[in-house]
Length: 88
Image (cartoon, rainbow, N blue to C red; front, side, top):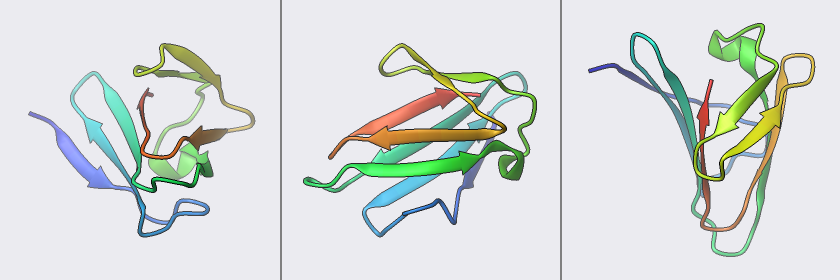
């Protein structure tokens, strides 16, 4: 159960990147995929545009890192052939 919605318009997005949100009643995950074998994908996500506000950090479930959110913006780098699963 839950909702799925593609995220369009990420900064620096290309045909080699894909992002979507998977939501259930009590959890939201932002999944970002980088299909490039050679280029790191760097982007900035404005969480308000995703309907998420008042978030100070997000958890990257793949790396077990906490990523800071600065003034509503999340900056992230995804390595070649890499991904991030972010708990919002």
